[in-house]
Length: 154
Image 1: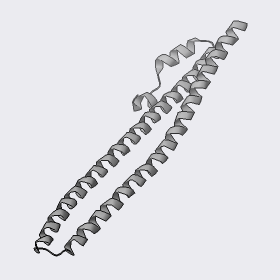
Image 2 (image 1 turned 180 degrees about the vertical axis):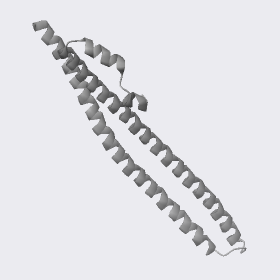
Image 3 (image 1 turned 30 degrees about the vertical axis):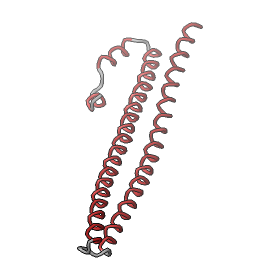
């Protein structure tokens, strides 16, 4: 659905409604309104699902980059250890690398926590929209059954 669908009235629908009786037109209008609301809510669900997917992808990329950095630092730490063993470097030099490894571990934990925090917020929104979507569907089913029930009694 594009923006024009919202801005330009659907003339075929209006023509059909003007040819029907007012009660039928009101029922169709209500039905159209509920279906439109359901479509909007469905689109919101799609967007929220995409947000969840993108956030998980971003987190996975960030964690992979942090793991790559840690692997490089561990390799550097190994080289420093070998150099220190042969008195080419001081053992104290390894302290800087150990601190950086600790910082990377902290950054990984922070990334996981932030991802979880983001996911909780988006999932809360997702569940609220899903509930509204299901309520709109239930209303549509109810109205559809009420409409057929009234016709059967008239």
